[in-house]
Structure formats: C-alpha cells, structure tokens
Amino acid sequence: MKKDDYVRILDFLPRGKSEVPPHKRKPIAQAIGEKFFSLLEISPRDNVTLESGERAYIGEEARDKVDHIERRIKYDWLTPTAKTELAIILVDIVKDQEERFVEFYNTAGTLSTRLHKLEILPRIGKRHRDDILNERQREPFKDFKDMHDRVKNIPEPAKVIAEKIIKELKGESKYHLFVPLVGDEIRTREDVKPRLFKY
Image (cartoon, rainbow, N blue to C red):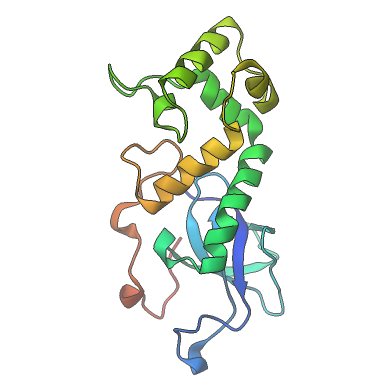
C-alpha cells in the first residue's frame, strides 16, 4: 500500500463525531495525503488542536501533532465541512507541487488508440488536448502560468487536476491518473474494530 508522509487537515472535530456514543467520543480529524491523496481519519496528540488546511506529518518518524491514524476512509464518509474544504485544499496542494503536475501535462501519453490521458481531465476536450500537445512539442511548459499564456482559453491547470483527483476519490472516474486504487482495503464503519487501523 502506498503511504503518504504528510497530510492536509480537512476538518477537525474536537468533540469527536456525533454518531459515536458520547462515552466513546474523542478528538478526530479528517485529512488528505499530499502525494497519494489518501483520505484518512487521524487522532491528534493530547491537547493538540488542528486547523483546516494545516499540514501534519504522519510518516514513520516521530510525529509532533498526530498520535495515530484511525483508518482510511471513503469520500462519502467525509463531513460536509471536509468536502467543502477538499476542493480548496487540493488546489493548494497541486500548486505547491507545480513541477510534478506541469511534468504530467508535458509528458502525458495515450490510454488507447482513441483516447489520450489529457482528454479525461475535466473541461479538457479534443481542442485543448491538441493545443497542449502542439505547444509542448514546440517547447515544454515551464509552469502553470506558461500553460495559461500559451494555450488559448485553457481552464486553470491546477483546478483541472484538483477536479480530476476529486472525481477519482468519488469513484466517478474509470481511469485513475493520480489516486491509487485501494480496493477493499477501506473498511466500513461496521467493520472497524477497537484496535487501530494499520496504515
């Protein structure tokens, strides 16, 4: 399983989740991984308050803010606040990793003889695909601004990537470009045992 070392906080519930019996409630945060876009529920260390958008370390070394990872979750399990924040925070993550995603635009190839990876991005049709391919052949894109300047009427490149990631997280995309398929590793609420979810 591919693991993220850092997450961004989507929502922090200092009193825990309302569907949990009162005597079992504890602070919990919902977060998204920066590299593999894992959706996780994490337990903070004692007396730690997490803010929406905050970056937190969850890797194998000592963690200053996170005590443990409760479990990997599905998009549908996110709180309304987490779903709202997701779109905003994903754009920030993509912009922070601009080089990685500009490289995708510069090197993306075909999925089949009739379908190009660029075409399955939201709001990128055949015309934009052809314009991107022609421009990158002339000279690779340097950054998102360079793409915006050279490809006429292109939607904001960072938002396009963020929207694709959300579609993959929702299970609405046949082809996954950025979110590894997890399969049945995600357990339902009913399956969760008292022991920690091994992440």
